[in-house]
Amino acid sequence: MTDAASRSPEAAPDSPAIRAALYLRVSTNRQAEHDLSIPDQRRQAERYCTAKGWQIVAEYFEPGQSATDDRRPEFQRMMDAALHGGTPFDVVLVHSFSRFFRDQFQLEFYVRKLAKADVRLVSITQDLGDDPMSNMIRQIMALFDEYQSKENAKHVLRAMKENARQGFWNGALPPIGYRTVEAEKRGAKIKKKLEIDPIHAETVRLIYRLALRGDGDSGPMGLKSITKHLNERDIRTRDGGRWGIAAVHQILTRTTYAGEHRFNTYDSKAKRPKPESEHVVMEVPAIVPKEEWQAVQAHLKSRNPKWTPPRTVSGPTLLTGIAFCASCGGAMTLRTGKSGRYRYYTCSTRARQGNTGCGGTTVPMGKLDKAVTSHIENRLLDPRRLTALLSEVLNRREEYIARRQSHITELRKRASEADAKLNRLYEAIENGIADLGDPALKGRVAELSAIRDQAKADAERAAGAIERAGPELTEEKVEAFASAARKRLRKSDGSYRRDHLRAVAQRIEVIDKTEARIMGSRTALLKTLTAASAQTTAGGVPTLEPKWRARQDSNLRPDA
Image (cartoon, rainbow, N blue to C red; front, side):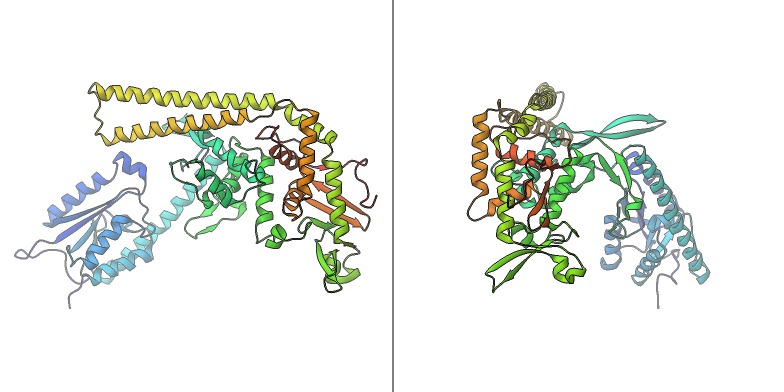
């Protein structure tokens, strides 16, 4: 019986020359780009084959691929040819066994697969025989290669984590809305940091506005609605593609946009997230305020069926999911009596455990619903209070418009620069200096055209937002808005009433049968009012006050 382990690679004088396939690999893109290793590997392999009298029949180049696994295109192509191609070569020649694999188990697995096809693995620098001792030495070498690979990875990761701690970018594609800029130079290395990309940052801000306030005709929008909104208006991703739900979700949940980029969060080999203790927090310029990012997380969590049952979001009960017992903090759940004739909100802890669990109360559903809606309608939607709230927004209108004008100027400047570069390229083509058939030139023209068109489109959208900014606030407009809001609050089917309550009141604590405390985010309240009012700025202005609570003059008992 003949196999690769027993057959000598040396050809007899009158036999055909041994056919060799060269497998040449470097582990990093930087080595591949600078052509540091593969030409040297090829030269040594050619000299080795010449000395042995072997014939090179195939070459497989693997630039910038790790040898810790078999997810390598050229490697798989070579193995497919060896195992299923009728044995087109007798030897796979590598510079060292580490070029083939840096994993001892995988190395031996593929050596045996090659042996079954009567193909032998040979190393130029680690030329071993076929006896058991040589096989053991190869396995020991593979173990050392695997250990060295893991140690190198550990040291590289430690250096990258320190680089991130110092605020420098580690080289991956930056999140949409950001771009890299040179920050400093240390020897031959150029350190880079993230800065806001004015073109795509506006798309990120738009996604956050839609999640919190909607498009003006709706309440806060979900992931699917946001994705549909972007695609219907031909707002493209960074590479010119269409949006998907996963991409929108990533933008809304990534801490980077609030100014804290997290590095080393995922184990790509184990395919699972890393513990938070291993994360490195890197400060970057924030695209959205942290308060707005946190509000979006709370909104997503409230709509997540893992945390909030679907009935809490869409059920018919008005206060489901936002009413809580003031004594224990447990949710107020619906209970019925007399075959459903009577409906109550009752403390869930008390319902499960009795008086020993909580001394909370039970309130007729109609009474609590009426008290809460009446308070919001008569107190919160009072024109005088609305005037004060909306005046605070409009007082910042000039600052908002100035910021948007600066953004528009930057976008138009970028569009003009791209247009000027395109014109220079077209002149070079007309004068015969450049050839339009050059693929690199075509790619550059397409890139500049995309930058120009995207910048112009974003500038137009930003200008439209300024045009929609509200004029001076008048008593008539406030009264009209308050009247419309009260009517919508009393809508017969209750659908808008639930959405509106959740926008302005995130928590209702029931103290007893005669008193309840309404709490909510002042930021969410202002954004709800400004988004719903055609007379206020479309983007809204968040306040620095984290919470609002009704003062004593309006915090009356429900039955008062």
